[in-house]
Amino acid sequence: MMNSAKSIPISDPILSAEALAMARLKNEDDPSQWIMLVEAGEDIDVEKDLDYLKKRGYKIEISS
Image 1 (cartoon, one colour):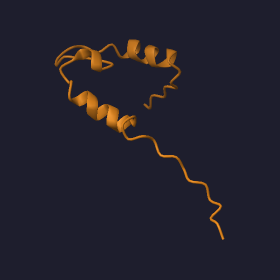
Image 2 (spheres, one colour; image 1 turned 30 degrees about the vertical axis):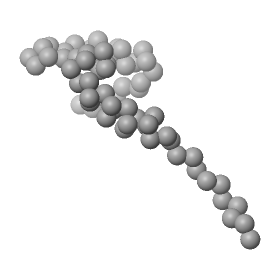
Image 3 (cartoon, rainbow, N blue to C red; image 1 turned 180 degrees about the vertical axis):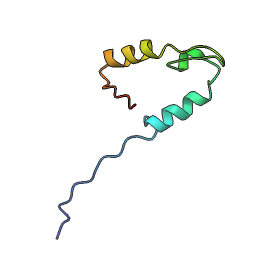
Image 4 (cartoon, helix red, strand yellow; image 1 turned 135 degrees about the horizontal axis):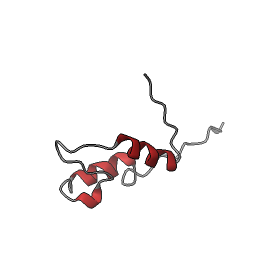
């Protein structure tokens, strides 16, 4: 009797999010490899960042 269960495709490890993140760590001094670069002591405009995320389609919920 043959097994009728279908196999679940697994992402190519070279293209997985984890593999891509690990590859970026090799270039941690290259700012083009990172979405956001903030220096120590630099102010962060939280409202601007939240607006950016909302425009990208993220639903933002801030607990009080």
